[in-house]
Length: 372
Picture (cartoon, one colour):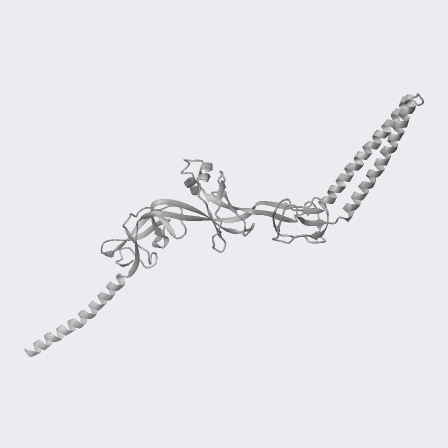
């Protein structure tokens, strides 16, 4: 009898040693199956998302500076990046031969003027003789013709002088307007001609930012064609320029034009925004992004890291009863700021979504411990 009791107690102890580890293992499994993850209760709010569009900048008016005559550069009066005013001297071309041409033209004018004076005297004398019937009419007419020819030569000499002076003035290349000097490839001693690009003068008081809008963007702007592009542009809010280093330019800009033609090769239309540049901080060639705000009221806004994508469809995990999560497809608006999405379908106010581990550790029908 005692042996049976001892045997029964041994079996009970053995069962306990088996059950206890199994219970601990089950508790560990439950702890692993219910990780603590951050969640968010969604609700409606006003949003002001910004969509970025890559852009390159250029001056309001970039002017190519080319000489109007051929010759050797004798002086470069400015440096690259220098701000210059209208009429300021930029380049000087060799003036020796040009000045000599002016001097020769002046001398030719003096000779022509002397010939006119002589011809005028002859014509006056012949008129007196003709009136007294001392010479014939043809003889008088010859002196008149000679005077007219001398006057024509004087006119030609004066025209040559004007041309020579103009060419001399072209030897001094000045700025047609205020701006910033671009790259200078030619220095003193270089032979230049009217086909030579000396530099580009950028009028940077205002800067134009060129970017592209796709077909969906234009449909959104025009409310699916309910209003014209011109009306849509007038209604567009001010835009922001994000510089290449990620900082925001201090002066807001305005979209001034959108091409009405969509390029079939790119599916986009060109657009232009203009930004004031009073401090001259912006330069032609700068790059960045034009940030266009999208103002919406009473929308559901969720962080992008709370979603994952399968075959161009967006999903998120909604926390249900007993803290079990289930995958839910959602639809989103086209605009986003790279951090958040505007949800247009699939969620409602009060839903709780997982915002941590989505696309990595969270699985459908997983039980979690919500962490707010």
